[in-house]
Length: 216
Image 1 (spheres, rainbow, N blue to C red):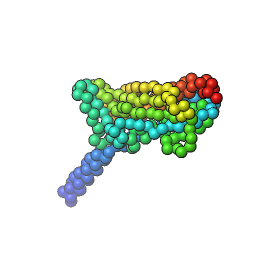
Image 2 (image 1 turned 90 degrees about the vertical axis):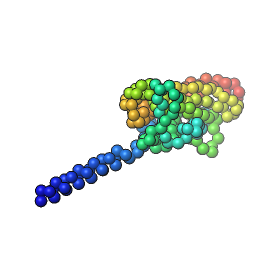
Image 3 (image 1 turned 60 degrees about the vertical axis):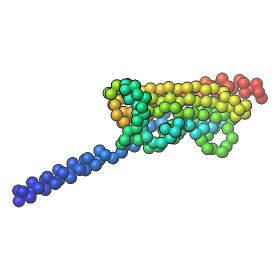
Image 4 (image 1 turned 30 degrees about the vertical axis):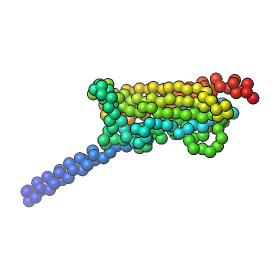
């Protein structure tokens, strides 16, 4: 009887260990977190403008078109780009950024309407974004940061000209030197990026208004 009980306990422990080992092998899928806090949430919604803005689909290099979560070991000075084996994004980074950008700009006001990518309606102006880097960079084995590099271009459809362009570089320190810390840091970097794009877009649009008035 005693041997039987010991055998059952051993089997239970073994099975428990197998279940635990299986759980830690499950891949982790990350999102960017909640929506960005818009500039106008601090001072009330902005006035609606007369122009319609379309946000173009965010462009990205080929290596960022998938869901892989990338990191670089900068302290090794070898310029290698690596991907986590058991962690990734729930969608390509550009696809995750697009709704954050659109909702923040729409909530901020200043436009009669804000159209998303692929909307067939005619727009007066378009915001074109290119994502150049979206990765976790390690300066030391235990120290890393989420890095977001992107370029924003505001295009006037009536004059077929570039109104303004700006490059954004954002780094946010990761709380832990792993995929979870990198995902959290890149989520915070994304929200900072969206807030900065909104503020820049507002300034660029305001600077464009007198010239539009002269052309009418």
